[in-house]
Length: 209
Image (tube, rainbow, N blue to C red):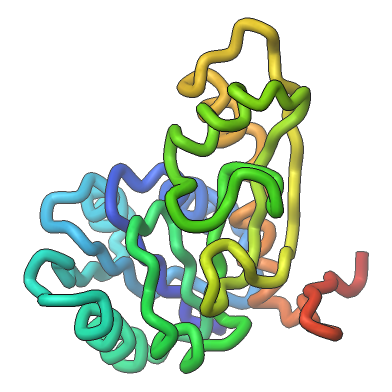
């Protein structure tokens, strides 16, 4: 049984999707063993506690720079014996000391179809604002591995939704979360725990489809 450690910063809607999927028996071969938050008082911590999942708070504000903060996160991941790290609304780009220690073992969800509307500065509603500004007809979310560059790791799964003429960033964000993020993130986590994701030439493939 693989240990899944989830990193959060805010409300934890994607964490809740993982918790609900786990409760339904949809995550095979792994369990959420710990939730780590970058903020005290994040609602995601309450979600974890309600599900009897241990929590740890490592406040970003207590560290002078990203490197020392990332080292603290890495030390905690090692303590937790993490097999898989899931970034679920975690608002900090971790230093390469973490990504190099956990290659192809950190998964992130990005609310757009990479390589569109991604990279540094593209997060939260900003992603959807840019998509609508550009006039795309479909958008969606990408589940990908995390490497040293923002949103540049191997893509595991992608899903789409239609963009409607009267969409606001908030409406589009909600549609993508409900129809793509909350479904594909637990699926990708289960695939990882079942050892069904393999890497070839830097790309991720799913076996046994």
